[in-house]
Length: 51
Image 1 (cartoon, rainbow, N blue to C red):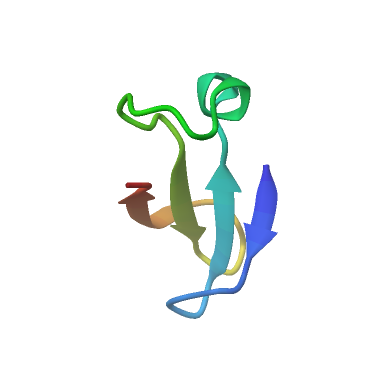
Image 2 (image 1 turned 90 degrees about the horizontal axis):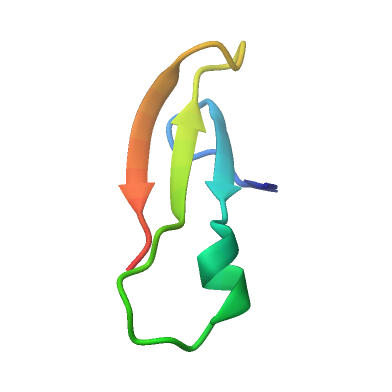
């Protein structure tokens, strides 16, 4: 997991799926995604699918 800049005043995290890491240039649907959490990191504000 990596931390990305906040989008809506919370904390952003990129969640990378092992399948995407094993085949980074693959043409299959990506399984990784990114989430925005509130400032206490207790609630998901938004979820974004990688494309």
